[in-house]
Image (cartoon, one colour):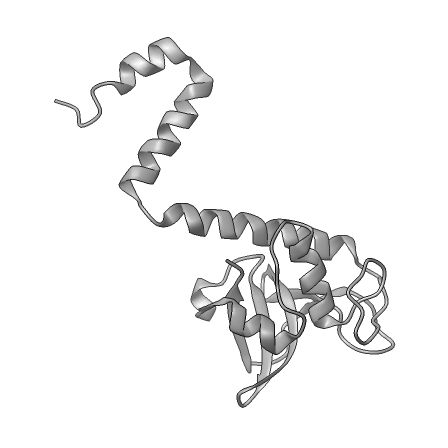
Length: 157
């Protein structure tokens, strides 16, 4: 006997669109706690798209958009656009995220550059060991390869 005897009856009555809903509900019952991770990844991926859309915007110390950014201003702006709040500085943002190993990082997670325990820069992970960030005075928002091993990763909740 099936653990879900009602699903065939639901499928035949409800149609194909509801099959997806039933599958999602069933999966969330079988895998509690996974829905939060999926939602965080979606927000991160959406924030990544916002950051990428700002390509070429000039760096300005203390700026948080919409046309000029410093590093933490870009991450703050990108996540705010998708309904997530972050504090203002890179160090504060690190303290607000769920910390991850490099092996657990996903596109949309934050990448924090540090010297010892001092976080000094942040960008949004784009996959393939690259980040979107606003690097320094005289530069603009761009996609760039991670250049250091002194990085930590965090996921916005």
